[in-house]
Image (cartoon, rainbow, N blue to C red; front, side, top):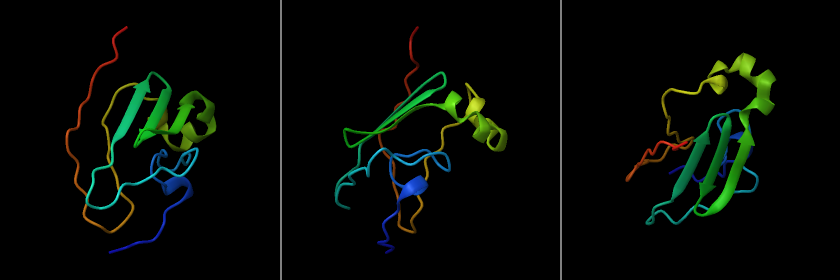
Length: 101
């Protein structure tokens, strides 16, 4: 098993290749499930990792990055779940709820 610590843009709770989390997100032991909450409201993204606010940014602030990653400007599309370590990963109880206006 790969036990290296990931940091910066690849750390738990960040947004891939854009910005790492505010602070290292606490992972639970391998025998327990991590709980992740992601809120995407127009251009604002918020990530909580095991009840710790890990990320909260307005993607409009990353206008220069949007040229290299046009997906940042999208208001619709796919949701990707990703891991950067060579260990088995499982997801459960994924719930997608529209934000009512």
